[in-house]
Length: 350
Image (cartoon, rainbow, N blue to C red; front, side, top):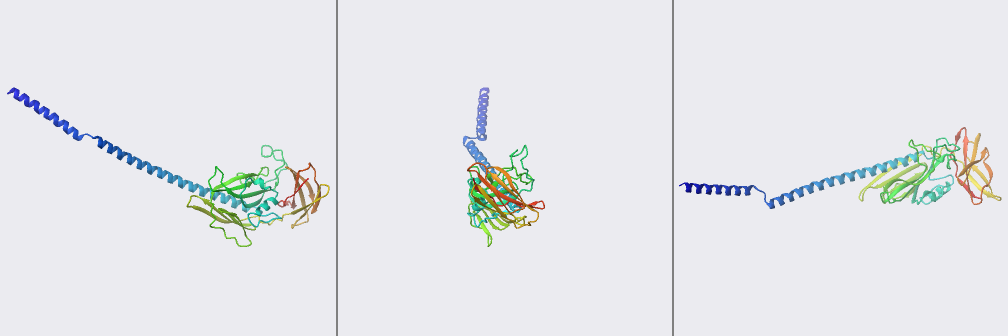
């Protein structure tokens, strides 16, 4: 009896142990289940990561578009403001632009070499902006051109805008470039500063020209693609387009009018070469002649000097210096303490 009871005890114990192990196998995780869970976790993680990346890219694209629109708006406002300050737009006393090509003649007549503009593209605007700050005879210490006369012309700034293909470090397809002195933070122009060429104002300018500003006579349309202007004397209808993406073009257009206009008479200078390295200079002046003083300036290479001051409307100047040097002349008129903008420039080579 004891043996039989002992045998049954061990048999029940073994059965219970077997039943416990079998029950544990049912509650455990199989390899297939582990792989399935890993795949689901990986898929969920990938979807979350893809969503995060997509959202980040969309946010960056939105920021990029907003930045381009902001840059275009700032450039548009800057150019419009310079138009408002100019007393001449796309013309000198002797030459008026009839299209973008003849604008090169205006720039040349203003006394600039086209090479001064750098590798320029399509010319769009030429502006003459008066310098309201006092013009020193010698630039002060601690500033640009210290100890030397201010670069000529000293009483106004010549500004040229053109459209050309974007360089390596700028967004395609085109950029607007500027030639001229860089204004100070308060907007004033330092007459002692040298002009800067090929200064990029804004990039990502569109290469399309489906829309051109209406430009009825006597307006003159200049420019191309995403940077165009219709110039009507002192009024400019300005159009700019930014290439934001392959399917989106941001467009800005407005009208800017010079506050100064051509209300100030400007002398018109003429010069004739005479034998013996002498030039005869004469000028016409539509302003008041009584108590008006005319001042003729001469620039030889980079040195500027005053060669005449008086009430006459002509003078003769002997070309000095070395053979091959270029002598350039301009004239201003001062009446009652008010000085006119500088005339056109006439140049001779000794």
